[in-house]
Image (cartoon, rainbow, N blue to C red):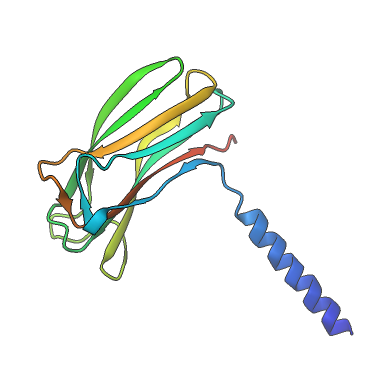
Length: 160
């Protein structure tokens, strides 16, 4: 009987820890698979974040997954940001994906490499409301081959 009580106590402790540990401050967490691993100009990654507290700093990140057969050591993207109190902002980013010796910088699993890359850190939206973030590939190749999927994460930054 005592073993059962200990087991039940441990079970619920692990369950509570797991549920509480899943608490994230993500306002957006998108991931879109590319058809036949080809990212064309028309396949824009979109997300909408509802900002309730503009005083809260947020972090915007670009997620990319590519195969080992991706031809380049970098990628260029365009980020478009729009919403209330904000004229449409477009920024071009270049991200390094591989070292000069060809070693991929992202985390690998089989033939796929995943990178989570910063867009804006400790950013404050100008006012409460819905904001749209859009990402498009900005390489010369269209479509850009061997891109498995891409996404956007917008998360609140914990205040310390």
